[in-house]
Image 1: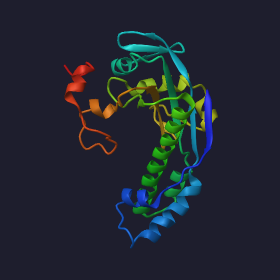
Image 2 (image 1 turned 90 degrees about the vertical axis):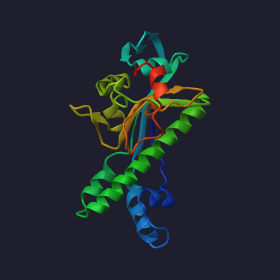
Image 3 (image 1 turned 135 degrees about the vertical axis):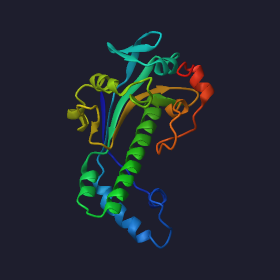
Image 4 (image 1 turned 30 degrees about the vertical axis):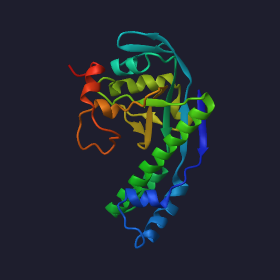
Length: 225
């Protein structure tokens, strides 16, 4: 198990302005003020593990004695032996600060900034994986991102990584929600062609969508008959 701490996340005014739908020029001072408040409260940390797939079944894989059941995951790692389970968080300090404001709009601003920071932490981790393990391309999947890989397997992922709470301060609630909320988990795997769970999800108006739904791809993966 590997732990990355003291990750430096620099919030870019232009990115924050874009996410908050603020006008350039007239609201620069407010954007800068938000960044100056948020920046010191970001505690980005990562715990991950280098694992080798022990067994590949028809619709499941075994990693370190733990079986993950997903037809899509199984297909994605068909020619892969090494995978990287992970949990990333930016801590709870930024959310706690947001709760101190009575202004709902300001709470929203800090929530958006927290999401930006979490994305930057994930990008940092991706760069580290590419550099340390000579990965040209890679993709990721997360428990609960598709019905094919249910959220119930989140607990298995945490078991694979050991005591995640002791490592980076993230735990699972009884409903399998990560605490702190601004945390993400999943499994990275090497790939020549980028894969996004969004390609297999028909849900419309999803704020987290990265690419369009691909009906033919869903048929290829066997989740659409």
